[in-house]
Image 1 (tube, protein in one colour):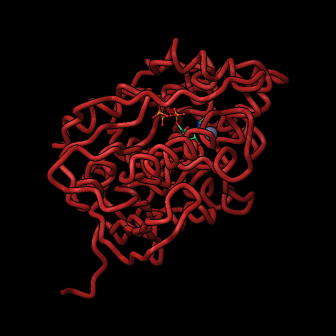
Image 2: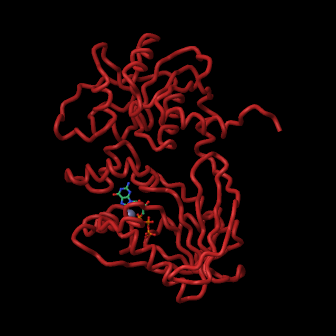
Image 3: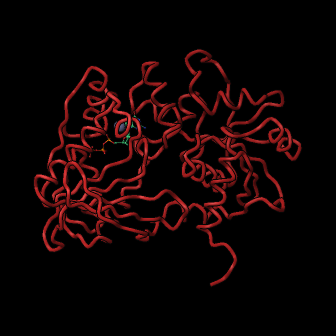
Length: 352
Ligand SMILES: Nc1nc2c(ncn2[C@@H]2O[C@H](COP(=O)(O)OP(=O)(O)OP(=O)(O)O)[C@@H](O)[C@H]2O)c(=O)[nH]1
Ligand SMILES: [Zn+2]
């Protein structure tokens, strides 16, 4: 095996670079995330050439900036713009307090592939999808990637390797095992909790649970995640067998920091879907293929799936896992989660 980093390894480094505020090279551009950009680096980028601010079409729509390109907008950065201006375009936290930031002039024409790749990389680093881009020759010591292969890589399915497994007695089921899986792209690990010894040749009672630190660990009343997690484990315990995948896709894939930004917007009156859009994300940024891949790795081919989300059922079916039955997972409403649950039924297609 060659000692030169693969694209997966280079992309993983690039994610870490962006999270620290370091630019990366994508094709003929230097690209840096606005969220972590320092004033010094902003000045250094400007000294090279005139930068543009690349935003998703979702964020651009909120800012009333014209979207000429498929899925994104390249906003011209005025000569006198400072870091505060960039941040206010990237982050909607102050949208309602300072609604008029524009007018924002956007570019059209030219090659948008480096811009698309830069936004996809920011999302995969769980940063706000707002990238300052400046045309440049590659600088030594910066992580370099070509936009086409990078985009293809970020859209591809990540391979998972089983790392370790051990017995873990639970309140809900004493005969349980926890399995750890590690993705080969340097991303966070995912877990499988196997309850009892479910036969591999019959549909297994299964749940695909997305991580929710606030609900699962803190007992937040704003969502139904914690009660769903425990209801699913208890049902598997009573059944004597089951498998719960705990997928580290916090905040429907946008990460905990962005989820808290979304909660702040919800406190300003937006619903869960609108909040994601204002931040520049789609409603749901999760890669649902991971669930199917882990079930296959564990030897399962068919499930009785505990969910209210028809997309999960469709995704498993289309990735080779039969769903013989959808088992509803209804938990109690309270005055903090009732709007959230209503939005899930009216906008996200949940069956509640
Ligand atoms: N972005 C965002 N994520 C949220 C919000 N509330 C909960 N989440 C996340 O949503 C995920 C859970 O997804 P849900 O849509 O509740 O449920 P589901 O897993 O799609 O469907 P079910 O199987 O029916 O539970 C977890 O990753 C939570 O962290 C929110 O307001 N904004
Ligand atoms: Zn939750």
